[in-house]
Length: 478
Image (cartoon, rainbow, N blue to C red):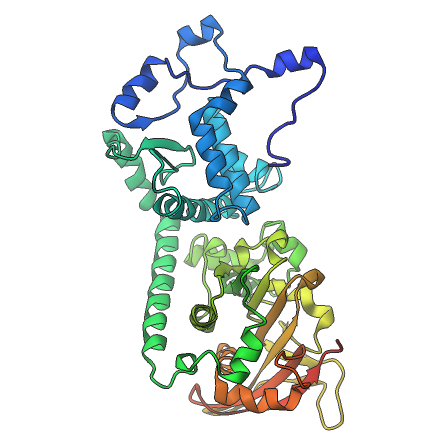
């Protein structure tokens, strides 16, 4: 994979120097002992091996059955469209087979595979850990399908990134007895306990939402996928050749900005730069240690992700749900994308800002989330703010259906000045009855819908939506 491994040099002197690679020898007595247990592993070379100067030529790597297995995996349907995971797997396998085990670390993988800066902080940027989880699932899927006849299984055990090549019929090797103590001590730290609590809570919400939405008899998603309005929209957001990425909001980051009273732009967010120095944040960190790196999202974000996943099952689409903090610019396009959340909690909205007429922004001084109407038409306001009338509240949300970056797919953006309004907007675009009245207005004589924006006003009573209506919309020029 380009950029991961150095290219071989052509001149003879440099070629001779590059022929040596530190790898595990099949004749090494330690590897042989592991193989007897059913595990083909890569072990550090012994002192005697170093003294003998035994090196492995790159040509030998190419003939290694384990390297051939790695090549088959990355060229399988499970990996062929995921260049990032291909790079990841090739890097760790090559390092292992060349016995460069010291280079298989989270820091090195982040720098060499995911192009992070040399001084990036893996504690604040968990791209390697999140991608490792995905890589493990992909490997399991491969060996359960087209790789089911492979005699050797490639796996990456949890807790590390070094690969193992395991004979399919052999039981998993027992964990060393002394490895339990460090693992237990890690789970006792306040940071990990906090992260575990957040993850468990999020998983619980997803399970409950999936169950409850699936049980609703009158759910808009239980209708036939042939329903005209829903099909007209979502058939343009699912496809056989492009996956659909649902990006749920990073609510932790929204709260960090609100507590510090400072906006952060997307460029700073992507650099995973240190959070702003602020007394409010310092106080917050005392109450909730490591709060700024915890991973909280919103109920409407999870709810919408569940809705999209159910629609994908009806329309034969492929959906990937990603936390906003885990996304990279390279992953945003090509493909379809569903963006959930106002810019303060999902900074990826910034990529589409210049295309939007209805744009939500946070006025941190007034503590208001405002919808800006950039080109008001007669009878429209330039700004729409939430209105509080005791238990009654009027809130706003927008839906924008636009081309994705470089026109490589389509994007659906759902934003609002409250979680409740965003959830109503998500229901609007997944409910045939609600959506049909709008699509009938904008259809241009074809089954496909034009790109559009709409603004929805919702009245809530004690937090429960009572009525909603489309008060304005725009049709994008084709």
